[in-house]
Picture 1: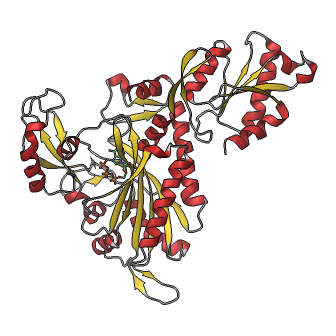
Picture 2 (picture 1 turned 180 degrees about the horizontal axis):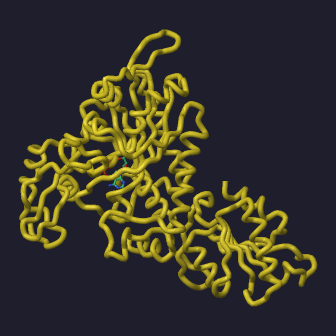
Picture 3 (picture 1 turned 45 degrees about the vertical axis):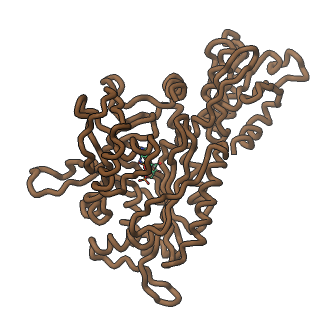
Length: 459
Ligand code: ATP
């Protein structure tokens, strides 16, 4: 993980948030390369969940929501993690995660009493990560919602407007608007990528557990009790999507929740094997009618769906997929990171799937002090850029150094314009060299075929 963190900074993927002020724990910024990789992952997700479907609708709801939202959802009363404090150095730990590390099954959904019973039994095995002592306070529920002061002009009698603890609530609030404006027939889905904020007790593992992050969610609205088949299909589709990112299937696994919340019928996570072991990237939840029933109760608005044929009215059940963008981004980076031997030296290479690579092609003149080479290379660059925006001009250092740098960014192709391009060997006039990232192999291609070659390779 240290190597990934260092490469991310060195090559402009991820920076620590507010770094010049010493950083802000649990907040990261996506740099110029990171933002392109993130966009490509989002595009791939949106394509799979909106464009490739007939009955899914996209949404982008406002982050701030009416305070009732978080009461209806249960976040105000129950969105908490078990926290204990080291009595020696005040470091806070998340008790369920520390118990899990020593092989004790525990999670944040357990009651305060149940988690304290387990904590008391095993506290002699849990060390403070900062000072190493084993002297902790009792575990207490710590609410993760982040409060804002939106509209709070007097502080008296105003209810806090929270930042979203999860992005999906926007879909429930707009469910009726979508039904009224789009006239979808059940079953149908709504897809959204939105920000979420959580006061995580101990943000850790780089992008894995942050306090600000993005979630990509789908909510699939179905007739009551018609959950089983659709749930299995959704699980398969989500698995396939990870494979479409080029992720090694051996590093993925499904894990079923042992401890279901009272309204849920089933819940599975898709986990990726990060350097520290398998951990959750996405949750797939069979949630019954809980969410819409809660919002119906708290808002007083009828959220029942009327079947257009039978005129039957019911509150739809929901099958949810909820994925953390930062976690997928991290999984993609970890999976792509390789060190191998090339040209007699060890190189670092990101073997990103071409459609995800932040830079698809680096275009270079063989020598930057030869104006005729630079002019021709500029021509090729401009031609390609018209149709493939994620390319870059690279004339920094010698060709070997450029290749190493592009390997670290994950650029699948490097194009070099040399004297043969200009016609030194007449049969090679107007051809370029294209070098393949993974094998280091080079081939010559007519300039007229370059755009199509790249477009086909990056689909
Ligand atoms: P965890 O048990 O790891 O805290 P969770 O079960 O609370 O996660 P959900 O509320 O189901 O997570 O959120 C859906 C997805 O959002 C998760 O699968 C994860 O990918 C992502 N996610 C949740 N919390 C964070 C976080 N603090 N930082 C980054 N991503 C997160």
